[in-house]
Image 1 (spheres, rainbow, N blue to C red):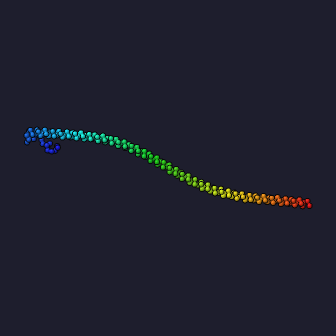
Image 2 (tube, rainbow, N blue to C red):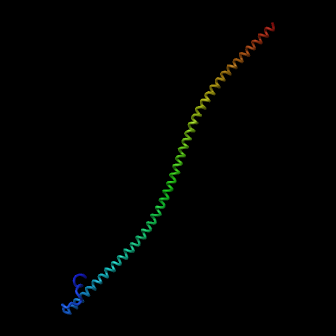
Image 3 (cartoon, rainbow, N blue to C red):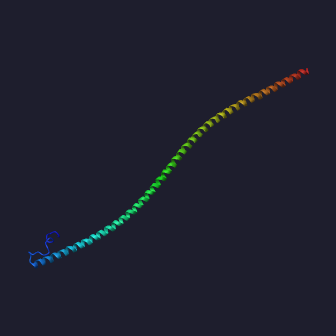
Length: 165
């Protein structure tokens, strides 16, 4: 490589004969050209890889922005639905309270109706008993009137008999 000792030697060393030095220099130049070609290929490959990765990163960033926007939209909808749910639960609680109040009123009315029905039945029974008593007394009055009429007839007949004597 670059640090194997050849690169650290001066381009021309007086301890070597000039033909060997030229041959070694040509060899080192060829070796360096080969290494440069390999480095250029590696650089091209790395740039291609970097371009692919940058394209992938750009695509992922775009996807991330889209997913973030979708998430934000869904979060907004979720918050809206939670608010609507809260309002509906509040209305439902109000309706339940109204329903419980109405049930208390209905129960109270049923109790009042039951009491009124019992009092009405008692009043009807009392009226019927009073009616029977009145009918019985009316029958007694009719009998008394008949007796009275019969006594009056007897008295009149007696008076006629007494007067005719």
